[in-house]
Image (cartoon, rainbow over all chains, first blue to last red; front, side, top):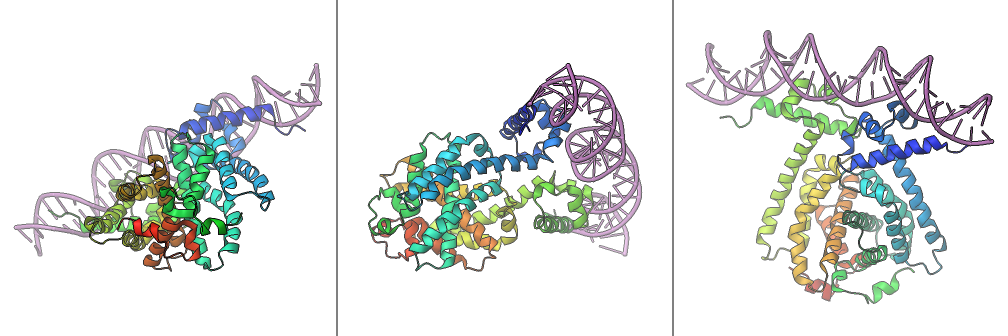
Length: 204
Length: 204
DNA sequence: AACGATATTCAACACTGTGTTGAAATACCT
DNA sequence: AGGTATTTCAACACAGTGTTGAATATCGTT
């Protein structure tokens, strides 16, 4: 039982390549199935054999990326109490995004899909929030909500800028910056490394 | 010379009302001009007399919102050195968004437009970045870039959550939270009000 | 109130893209 | 090499697009 026919893989590869190529020049809403198939060099009927429409294609591509994303995070999260710092987790995230740059530059780019970013955020959410909650009992749930809304969107914003600039900075350095901004806010710009209490109290 | 015919205003109002109504139920990409005109109760030809397509309509609605946005910010920015705190500016921003909730819930919502959020960010950018640069000479330009990318996206993220929750929190409180997160990072959750040096050194 | 000007309606048009069909051709895997 | 699965191809009905011109309704002004 051939899990994946060679022809199918080729077809899907052609479709996806053509799709990302088109997305570099125009927003998704003005890409038609017809045009996509012509640039991919495949028959239109073949497209419909695999996807229902353009947005279905996008969704499935994102899906596969998110599987990678989850897999990249899992080993980091499993140890959890075994000396893994939040910085390392964050670095792992950036690294994973870097490895999937071709898709991410599109889905996180100016013509990208908001929902995709939202899902990236949601994946991180459950892992981070509970750690926070344990260590900041004084904070109200609403404050926690908004803090997470802020920093998650903030990380996405950094990621977008990073991708837009060709990812010259290393994943580790990006993670380090993100971590520090989350920890110290604007203190980050003052090279505030030894934050004292705040850092010490943060879950390891 | 009548600057705006009464009929035109009525037509545009009907179109926009129908548009936001439809956007509450389905993503923009599956709204056709035909359907829009039917729910608006106007002729399809009339739509094309004012807009070229659905996205043109969205763009023009966003445009008007951004004019409001700019106007709401200008008085705050003009004084600039006269005792206006960043907190007040931020509160003004949240207030403006709240007044344009009908459009913003759409353009910043899950089916919304990334470019719109990006433009909101860009408007704030020029005003904030130079203030930062003046006071944080130790920071590299890249650090400034990424710090701004982080906090601007962070604010948008908070805004989105705020809109999604029906804006029950006051604009002032939102601004206060945003401000503190930007200043103290996670220290915000520990009720860190008297940040000492950091706050004192921050531009007024 | 009546005017010219302007906006909207309406029906019709050609056109593009959609999504599906069945049969033929092609490539796959064992 | 053979049976199977995939792709191709032409054709189809269908829905939405964007534009047209003439008729109608509404406007601002005198």
